[in-house]
Length: 91
Image (cartoon, rainbow, N blue to C red; front, side, top):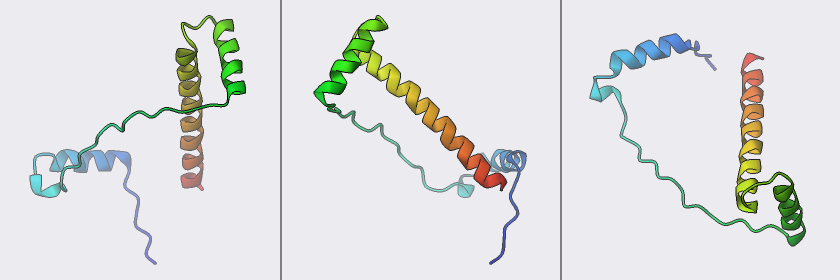
């Protein structure tokens, strides 16, 4: 199997800029829609613990505190995932 040479980020940028005005160089447009939000149920014990810490941190509501905590955790997970990808590529 042939191994293709990897283009640098700069080479990719130059190629995209060069082809930016050429409609034939681009594929069909892709539409992206934001998914509908969904409710998540949590066990009563977890909800009680969350309510305690939301009050402890003086959050305006348990919902707001949980959203903040989940977003912080997602940021950590995304960072760890990106780092793992970089490690795999560099090997």
